[in-house]
Each structure stands twice: as C-alpha cells, then as structure tokens.
Amino acid sequence: MGKVVPNLQLFLTLIFISLLILGLDSVRLLNWPKKALFFLTNPISFGLYSTKQSVGKQFYFIFAARTAGQENKALQDQLGKLLSENADLRKRLGEAEALVTQEQHLDPRTYHLLPARPIGLDRNLKIDQGEISGIKVGQPVVFQDNYLGQIVGITQSGASVKLLTDPDSKVAAFSLGKEGRAKGVVVGQFGVDLLMDKILHEEQISEGDLVYSEGTEEFLPRGLILGQVEEVLARENQVFKQAKIKPLFDIRDLELVFVITE
Amino acid sequence: MKTLIAILILASFLQATILPLDLALMIIILRTYIKDDSSNLYLAFFVGLLVSHLTISPLGILSLIYLGLTQATRMLNRSRLSEHIVTVIPLVFVLFVVKELTLGFSTIVNLWPEVFVSEAKNLFIESLLALPVYLVIRFWEERFVVKDIKLRV
Image 1 (tube, rainbow over the protein chains, first blue to last red):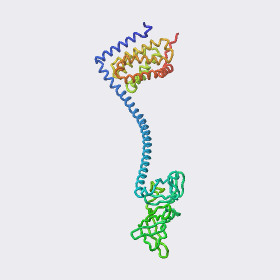
Image 2: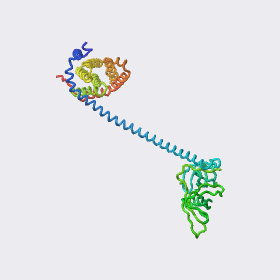
Image 3: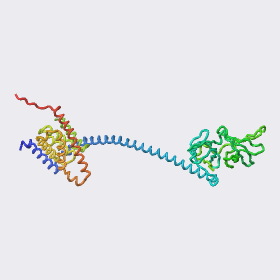
Image 4: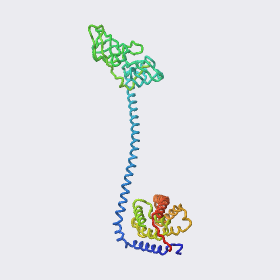
C-alpha cells in the first residue's frame, strides 16, 4: 500500500488535521484566530484589490478615450453631412421662393420662363442651362421684372449672359417719375455702372425715377425694369442730358435667374 | 523553498482578490509533477488553509481538496503517462474539474448557466496556462534549487 500511495501516513495525518480544522470551524471555535489573521491579510487583499481597480480605471480611460475619439470622428462626419444637406435645402428653398416671386412679377401665361442657376461671374454671367434646355442666343435674362442681360454664348449645358452693365450693352429705355417721363439709351459703364444717355433737355428726369426697357429691340419685352436713377447729369452746353442708373439687384446675390424663352 | 512559499502566498492573495484562476493549486500540482516530494503535501495543506481563509470558505475544506489532488498527482506521476510534457494540460484540466465538482460545481450548473460558462472558461484558461507554468517551475527547480548530493564513501 505504501508503495502505491507515497507518504500515506503523512497524507492521512494531514487529512485528519484538515477534517479537525473543518469541524472546529463549523462549530465556530476558530473565530478568534481567524479574526486575528484577518487583521494581517485584509490590508494586503485590499491593497491588491484597489491596485487592480486603479489599473482597471486607467485602462478603461484609454478605452473610453479611444471610443470617444471614434464617436467624435463619426459625429463630425455626420455634422458635415447635415451641414451640406442643410445648405442644399436652403439653396432649394431660395430657388423655390425665387420661382414663386418670379411668377408674381411676370405672368407665366405671357412669358415662358426657364429657371437657371448662376454658376460663375466674370465679364459675363454663366448659367447652368444651355442648348439642351432650349436656350438660344439673344434671349433675355430677367429676375422678377428686372432685366439682367442677354444670352450671347451657348453650350450644351451652359450659357453666357452679357450683363446690362457690360460696356457693349445698349438698351433703349425710358424713365418714369412724378415729374414726367424721359427717353434715352442705357449703356453699360465698365461693367459696374449704367448710364442713361441721349436724354433731351426738355424731358423730365429726376433722382429716384425707375428706368424701363423701351422694347424696341426684338429680343426684349417692353416695361422690364433696368434700374433706378441715381444722379442726373445735365449740362447746358451739351445736346443731351445723362443719368447715372443703379441696378436694383446685385447679380451676385441672386440664387436663380430666368431666361425668357418665348 | 522560501521563494516557492512566497510565490504561493502571493498567488493565494492574487486568486482571492484579482484573478479568478486557482494559481496556487496549479503551482502545487505542477511542482508535484516535477518533483515528487513529501513537502508538496505540507504546501498543499497550508496553502489550502490560507486560500480558505482569504476566500472566506470553511477552513480546512480546500486543504482536503488540495491534499487529495496533490496525492493523486503523486500517484499519476509514477505512471508512464507522465513522461510526456503535454500531459500536464489534461492533468490540470481533470484535476480542476474534480476540484470544481467537489466544491459543488454541479449545483452551480443547474442554478446559474452564466456562472457555469464563466467557470468553464476559467477551466479552459487554467488548462492552457498549465504548460507555461510547468516550464517555468521546471526551469526554476533545475537551475536555481540546490540539490543535496549524497556521496558514497
């Protein structure tokens, strides 16, 4: 037996002592030594436990920081998309409002209007509608009941508009105010201003009068607003009077313009 | 021996506070597997008492289990199976299953499936951990423990 089970006597002795301790503990006879031992072991156990907690917190902080970074990036992407969507919606709203306003000023039953977005501005205004949409060279471009310019160049999906302020632009016009009316020709001045020329001295024109298109050109309807008289230049030694005209709209502020196709 | 006792005390504290693995029993079993010595029985007895005290279990219960498992390891150590190093993994697994069953593992299975899953996971980890711990103890015993050499005169 001793060869099969080594140190049998020692083993049985220790088993017996273990059983004895178990028995004594079950009847609570070992409570005092256990309490005394707890005074020694509890601080060590607590120290190890608190160390684990603090190390765990550090790791959790790293994990949380990483998660927060990922969330932040995702939120920034989301914010970018929302801002882009918001800008698109605002643009569409502006266009819708411009469309509604336009129909109030020029009767769609009389004028066939094609909306177009300005996509660039240098000497000419570039719009995003072209030959595919039925635009032709010479057609007028308006906003509300204001004349902006005339189509001078065209591609498949875009067109160039010669603005009223272009030095090559000349439109027969008349002014209308409280004092009376005056006829003349509105010409562009260096791409920024307008000048109404060829006004007879006996014709009445004053500051604040609105200037309209005469409609003698084939492409342009009568009665479209060209601008407002800012200053009258009248000299006795000259044959005609002149007036500085200020456009009512800044072309750079417009979201949508309209081409009169018919 | 002093180093081993210190490591066993540290392992007892660790398993009672931080790690859910029975490191102390693993070290004793693996040392018994390497070095068949009666000191392993003393170690099993006292470490069992310490772990019982630290885990607030009835004193003596773990001593009984540790002693039984250590003695079983000593008996298995004499068989041919013990010659291969990889046998420590199934050995530790089987002995730890026996320990869990003795401590009422079967009742836990019926009551809390999540506890069973956790215990099974720990058993798996302990079995895999057995091999590296075995190698470390063997290295330590072979290189750093002074052996008594009896010269024949």
